[in-house]
Every structure is written in C-alpha cells, then in structure tokens.
Amino acid sequence: MEILVDNFAEKLNFMVESVLSADFIAVDTEFSGLSVGFEDKAHGFDQTEERYQKLKHNCSRMNAFQVGVCCYKWDARRSSYSSRPFNVYVWPHSEILGDRTMQFKTSNIRFLMKHNFDFNKLFNLGVNYQRLVDQGLIKEKIAQRAQDPSAIISTVTSEGARYMERRSYQSIGTSSQALLKEYIRAVSNFAQLVQTSEEIFLLEIHIESFALRRRLSQEL
Image (cartoon, rainbow, N blue to C red; front, side):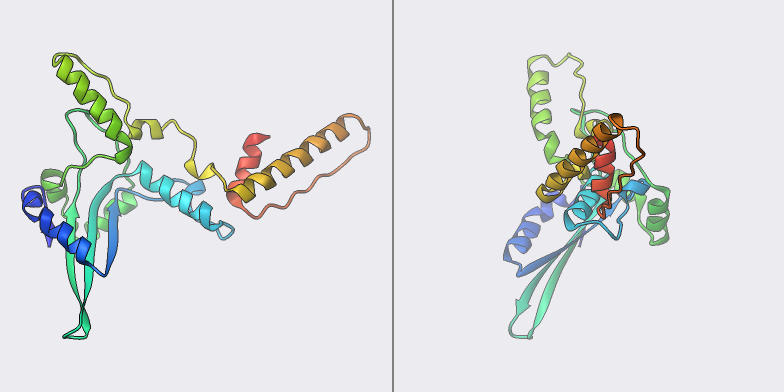
C-alpha cells in the first residue's frame, strides 16, 4: 500500500493496527546517499560496534526518501504468513526550522532513477517528518513564535550540527578504549626514551581495528 501525504491520516490507524498485531515486521529504507567517504566504508577489520557506528553516521548525514514496512502475521488456516506492506514516501520540511541543507550522492540518485523511483511523488506528496533529536528544538521555536510571532528565529538543527561534529563511530567501545590507553602509554614512553637517548629505536604497533588506528593517530 502506497502512503502519501494525502492519504496518511486516513491510513495511519490501519498501519498502527497492522504493526501492533504483526508476528514480525520487516523494514527497508531508501536514502539520499551512503558511504560518503573512504573512512565511512566497511572494512574487513571492523568490529560489530564500529560497523554499526559507520552505518549510523552515514544515515544521520543523509535523508530518508522512502520507508517500507511489511507486517507479517501467521495464518493458521492456510498454514502460511499473510503480509501487509506499506510504502511511505517521506520528505522533511518545516516552517519552524526553515530550509534544510541536505546531502545527495549521485550514485544513489542514479540507482533510484534506474528502478523507477518517483521523485515527483517524493517532493510533492512525501509525508513530512522531523528527526527525534530536533524535537526539543521544535518545541522551543514554537514557544518563542507564540510569544512573538514577528520575531525572526535562527535555528541550528541536528543536520547543521552534524556537519561540525566529529565522526560518531569514533566513540569506540570499552575494550578498544582500554587498548587505546595502552597504546598511548607505549608511545609516550617511547617518545621519552628517544629524547633521552642517542640510540636509534623503532616502535611497531599492530592494530587490526581501522577505527582504533585512526583514533590513535588523532590522540597523538
């Protein structure tokens, strides 16, 4: 079932009922882009946490174009699952937050065009949404506008903040943090040794984790 802004309110209760009564749910999304740079791509040495953080970072910088939700429920009479698929075009826009700065990747756009993605439906009939991280900001701006409707209110959304923040997947796990401290301590001791000696020394540290190697290079 295709969900657009003109039938969203009508179908919302049916969608909620389908989700709550389902035995399991499958979700798929289409984004404006993924894997922006080399450092965002998956590597064979990535740990599970690092892989998740990279995907999360990529998705947070891009915008969802379409959300697919399929609800499955077991039909004992037919001895098979029945399904209720929902295909929702989503497009964020807000008078409160103003114009958005968005990123697109040409390969993703070409892929969507190749598979007959309807951009007219997206831009004209996409269901409006906002990110949860902007919820507090939206409430604040609504309150400010209620007090002074003529005021021009500047906003820095989560999208704007994301261009300035460090890569989120550099928040390495507890075990990697312990290793990072050991490596930093080893390098510091090595640096002191080199400064107090005329001999030539070589320090080799073998690190399999890509994120940990990059974090170590930043700390040093």
